[in-house]
Length: 82
Image (cartoon, rainbow, N blue to C red; front, side, top):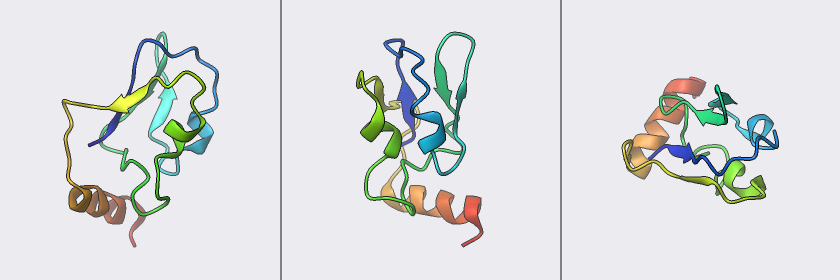
């Protein structure tokens, strides 16, 4: 699954630079995650880096974008060309 930033986001700016896929950007009110770019850091790290650094724990799995580990790895390969 891709991840989702909830409205509890305080716009602290720490998650955006941590994303190896460039999936996080500033939205109209809070940061947003582009589901087509989010691999939950599969292929890069053992844990999603944005979740690791978020001080308010506002990043959750997106129930509307469920993906298996294999699908996330496939997306990683597609995005990186590896």
